[in-house]
Image (tube, rainbow, N blue to C red; front, side, top):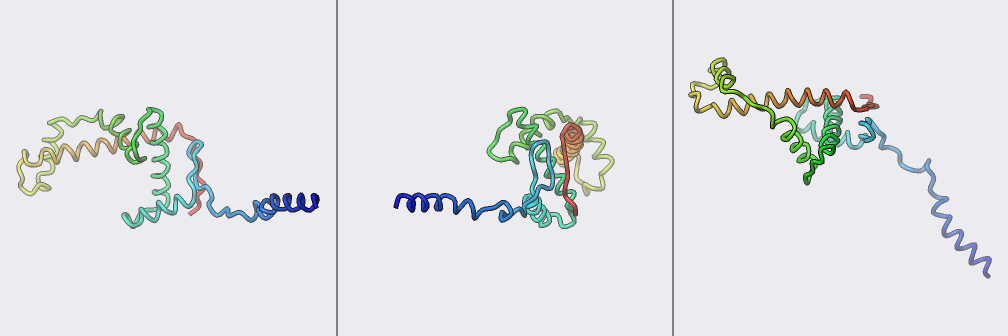
Amino acid sequence: MQRTFLHIMVSALLLPLLSFSPAAADFSDRVVAYVDNQAITLSEFKAQYAATLRLTPDVTGEDVLNTMINRVILLKEAKRYRIEAPTRDEVISEYINLKLRAFIRVSDQEIEGFYRENMGRFQGREYDDVRVEIENYLSEKALNAKLKDALRDLRKNADIKIQLKE
């Protein structure tokens, strides 16, 4: 009786383990890129690609993957500066505001020069009516250039391995 009870207990404990094998596991989600020690999986890539296609129909998979890599790099850099926020997008935005946007200044001469060179774009509107619009445009343009340079430098120091074949 004791031997039968022991046999039942061992069977109950081992049966689930025996029915599971690594070969039976679902390994359909593979890694498409590594950024330092963080992986980007195929399912993450596919979800981001589908979401991006809805907004930008002509986007390529390479563009989406590079954007995902850039986000990982920016989040890592923000973490280095101990920037915290409720969402990852807010962390990235805060990092960009503190480390890049804070150093951008557009001079009155640049704004006036842009107005003079592009008067036709403003359909006869006076300088004072479009000054803030021009300043915002030039600031965003400068921010994009600064961000592009920062990402290029950060990518040089990151260990990036791309394993996605389109």
